[in-house]
Length: 390
Image (cartoon, rainbow, N blue to C red; front, side, top):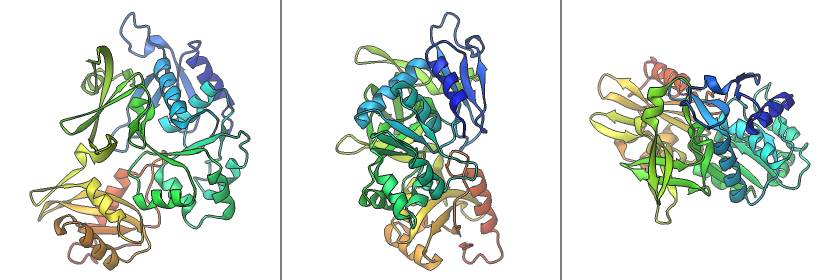
């Protein structure tokens, strides 16, 4: 993949010498003049990139990321990782995690290496690309599904290149604690990240905000603030007003973004994300957290990945359903789930697959998964509301 033209355009945009860069799914890009970005008249903000949100929960939005926001994010990342180095690009550049690999490289003055994603993400392609890295300090960003594939029957060479990374940033969705334990047990320095396009990607590492990032919980919702927060959405003033606001913090005016995620702080002040506020399932009049069910399924032996969502139910209004990647049987899954969660939250429909359907970002394709779960619930072989399907 030739990323040189894109790197040049991003470099000029970050220097304030070029229009903003918007990257398409195929890696091509267009330049958008500053006066077409809908910023307030007289604004001195320079937008460097227009980034699509993942679209995993609805229509993608075009997020405006300023030069200052991307610079603050890069500085915070370098401080958290204790240095700058060479990055391996293993994610699409049109989404924020992939874009940030290029941006961090430009600020660090290092040459990123892009793996070949034309055939999809495979351990073989990742290993081949990782062998091309030359700097002593090496980093990459992955989503959980990618790391799971790398650790599922890995070759000795794959483990060797993984161990050579100073840090592997892991984010973009719920992380199976068994996967995290396995990765760290294999000698990998995995750093969990939390963030979104609206915060220049990950801005909370291992539960702790990056330097300069503010974190608070309001009415159970995670709210993030600081220089990393986006300038808003292109051509969507109403949604910008609903999602972003400015408010004083410690005597300074801070820009904030309300994430829509439920969260809490543990005894050490680390963030624990509990799931989307709109992921609450109302089944038989009881509220069920999809995130809590996912966490429970991840504790069942043999479960590698799980995606929990509601499906329509004539009896319950909504029923809990799950798509699972794992080596356990349906009976083993249900017995294991019943041992770690209350009976009313155990999934009524279960679909086993070899791999979760994914978006280009590597995140689960919620629309495709919901359709498959709904179909399974109506299948003739469904017994007592529970279906298994390879």
